[in-house]
Image 1 (cartoon, rainbow, N blue to C red):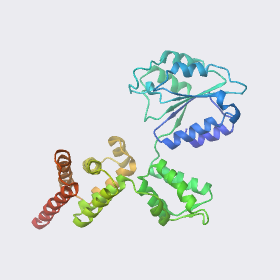
Image 2: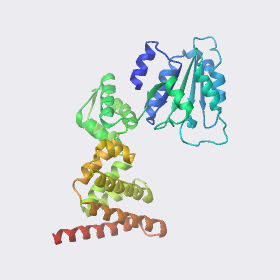
Image 3: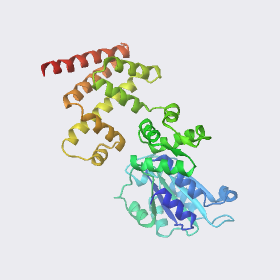
Length: 347
């Protein structure tokens, strides 16, 4: 189930004994946890809510708490955070976890305890016996990253629920500036609503003024300028990134990553892979794939490969010499623009 469905069920007192919040969308993880905390009255939380980090605390401690009767209350809430032993990760080897004890508990969960596993992972290791039992006994709550369409819908619902109207161009700009990351969108919405408190309107101008572009988005603009051979614009955007105190190696690393993605998308899309399949195969956000698909339609694979190799050379220069980063980038652009102009002349 999703977090909204969880909230509805809890509000109707439809409560299970074991839950797993699975997914890497931090804001959804937190909303789910807030909903569970709401089950315990404020004056009882000190005694009846326990939260345990599995990277520093053995699971046995959480299980002891879970098997205890609530103190002057109806129920006890026990939260097991970062249960890495349910995944393929190794985690802190100094901490010994009683997985067999957990398995025994799942056979007979304490009726007065709500046991919640907050698992900020893409998936659990379904080969493990304890995971199989947990999925059979527990209720799974999805905190997986939202795709662009669902993120748009969630922000629209949230703004309307708060009494605001966000126009389509403002929503488009918010998606672009946050790479469609729902956590960043929701965080930005708070600032936008505060800014538009009197009018109850959220405009594109407000988004442009209050929401900073991510490094990935700034680099994406730079990538387009490079590929189109816009020499002066490329240098200007590169200087802007340097002046914003981004490290040259980090800028170049993101550039290399972006061109690598473009090359992968160009090759795989030519083989008929869909946007969703590409995102899953390459393990990147669907919105990045959407932008990459739009970009690669305009350029040949050879252009992408040439730019990629040029950026690899910049990285070598940054790591092995004291040459000015902007000069290295300028030389790269001169060579790249010259090469694509030569190709045009041959045609």
